[in-house]
Amino acid sequence: MSKQDLLRKARAAGIETSKGGTALAPTRTAQTQERYVRRGLSLLARFVAAAGLEHDETPVSREFAEWLRDTIRPTLRPSAWRQYRAAAATVIEAMDDLSADAAIRIIGEPAEQGRQPRRTGARKRKRFPKDVFDRILVWLRRVSTSEVALIAADWVVAGLATGLRPGEWRAAMVEDCKLFVVNAKATNGRGNGEARTLDLAVVTDRTRGVIIRMTELGADWHRHGQYERRQRQVSHVLSRACMAATGQGGFTLYSLRHQFVATAKASLRPAEVSAAVGHCVTTTAIQAYGRRRSAWKPTDVRDVVLPVPDEVSTVRSPRPAGWMQVGM
Image (cartoon, rainbow, N blue to C red):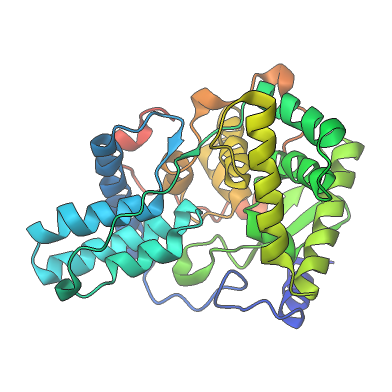
């Protein structure tokens, strides 16, 4: 079993190579991509400051796009806007939220379309605290009567242990204590290769079993054309569980990935964190995901997978602007 075996199976299962499957030949140089990342993150930082977001609030990509269209675009020449738009798109694609497609459309609108009605999405949390995790698992396993409650509980456990994007469970498999994952953001040099490998030797047998169940379930859902519908069901149950068990909203399946990154930052090097989540440069994991201050206590961390050295070595570390280091 290898990453190539996984990629062949993913293609055979009908996963589109241009949309979260395998990588296309890059149409940008590495230097251009890094320049877009730096500029895009700088724009995102300006938006976060303008919106007054707290450190644990995740920027919503649609709101970011509307701010760019309404505040930044009118100040730029068309040629400059094209550069800003490309940089913003690079960051939006990495933000991993459900309004990303709409955000890309917004910044791609012709100038004459003008303003569109504002639709403000709920702010999603960039963390998943240990006490919230404990209470939600109890509620899902013992209280909820939903048919997908136990699946949601598995997803929470596996998501926190692996950092997979919600959509990546459709194309992942376990072999020889390794989790192989098709990178969902692999075009234009955005991903660290077509797939990534995560070492499961450091997790408990119980958690490894949960991860295996999730890979099998994701593949089955995809095979039967049910993945998106089932993901929405699980997301709904998780949202209800959060409110019922903690009285707090905003925790989503994406929050699990953010928490994985935050916890990983406390013990791993930036290149290791980036390799674990499939990024080709360290700046995205540094700024666009959960911060180290949100990491779980070391005594609470039992199950967090590790990247493999070969993939860590291919992560690039462009020199970031000074603000990118703040709050890491």
